[in-house]
Image 1 (cartoon, rainbow, N blue to C red):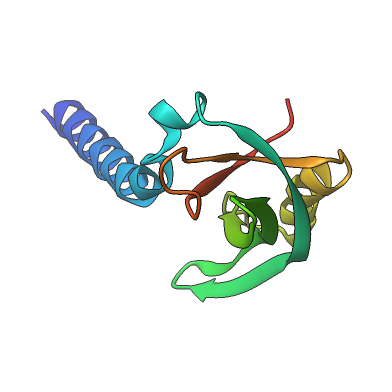
Image 2 (spheres, rainbow, N blue to C red):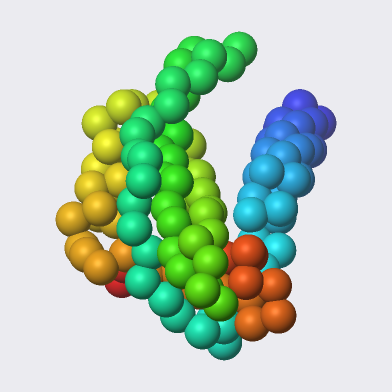
Length: 122
């Protein structure tokens, strides 16, 4: 009986974790299914770094980039927030993968040129 209860608790915990990850990631993926068809433009990195945030479980680190690109004769801006890490070194490594592979490319929504997504290196 107790071993069955352990399975139920484990399944519940996995379900809660899966749901929480979906809630965190879903807004970031809202353009992903269509964005691969959008035109690609070269972007310039304006600001980059790693943000440190405190949570109830300790410090977490998240790389970010602010970039600009030209579309329809206007300079536009966009931003990228990377994955969440428990180590600053891992967050900086993700940032280096993007930064160290110029040029930085973005995909731009064809009818909303102010909407863009960063093209991550392979």
